[in-house]
Image 1 (cartoon, rainbow, N blue to C red):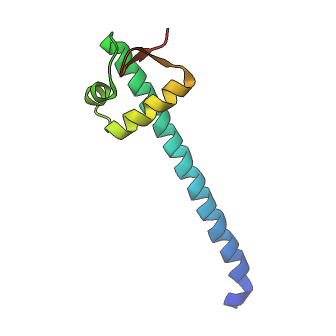
Image 2 (image 1 turned 30 degrees about the vertical axis):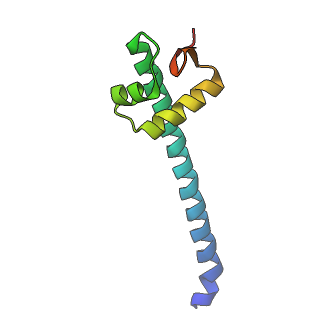
Image 3 (image 1 turned 45 degrees about the horizontal axis):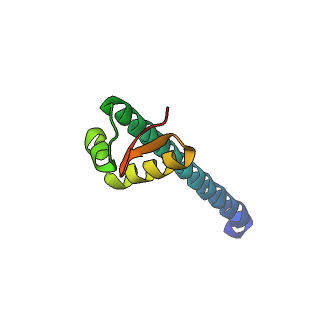
Amino acid sequence: MVEKYRDKVDFFVFALLKTNVYLCALILKTKKMEAKEQVLQAMREAGQPVNAGKVAEMTGLDRKIVDKAFDALKKEGAIVSPVRCKWEPAK
């Protein structure tokens, strides 16, 4: 009797795992977006060019997360560097 439903159970488990992977990816993407917004907000509040270490200190985010947010914001053109190693929101 177990063999009769084995294919259905295997399919259900596969579908469930696939859904969980999708949800995890969605959560990570959302957290990444939140980090970028936090970084931009901290940079606006600083009112002057700041480095990643200062943003990490201001936001309480891990430095690696801030570095990833900086990379993404640079690629988007959302931040600019008026002074070496310091960044501010693009105007």
